[in-house]
Image 1 (cartoon, rainbow, N blue to C red):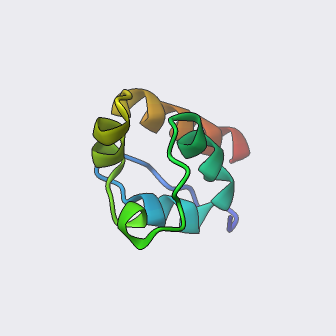
Image 2: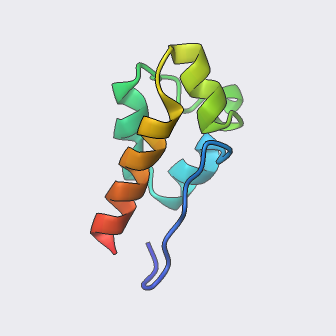
Length: 73
């Protein structure tokens, strides 16, 4: 991650964009049972769409990812 650059993730953020920004965020998607991160379809989904499919709370996932980025800043 470039210095002084932080991504702000929302429920509308595309999974592929988040992974491209920091591949280590994959663990948060794995935690919700999303193991197909290399699939073009999953990379084009928003966080909200993925959470709906996997029955998890999108707000909680967004918070985890943003907290992770804040801790790295």
